[in-house]
Image 1 (spheres, rainbow, N blue to C red):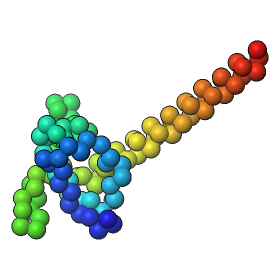
Image 2: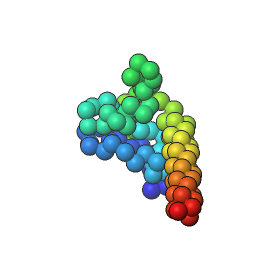
Image 3: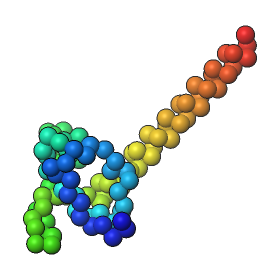
Image 4: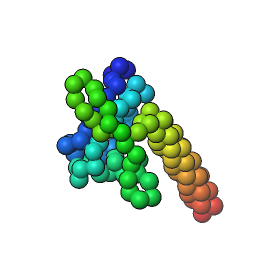
Length: 104
């Protein structure tokens, strides 16, 4: 999937997993239909709207998230930071629990 440039998930029930997309995806269409609103909302501003642009690809029109590659990188980075923080929190909790059982 390293050559995937366009992904259209409108009309599907996909609601997560962006962190697994390859960096080659340049155009991402997740029109704000009920089924994919969770992903659309990741790119929405405070008004609940995502900046989009029309793209013509292989004879079809797509309404894609504007600057998707950059936004995907930011999203992946935030997921990575969150995962690391969760790991740190879990290690601290385990350490505290071990200390409290050792003192008994």
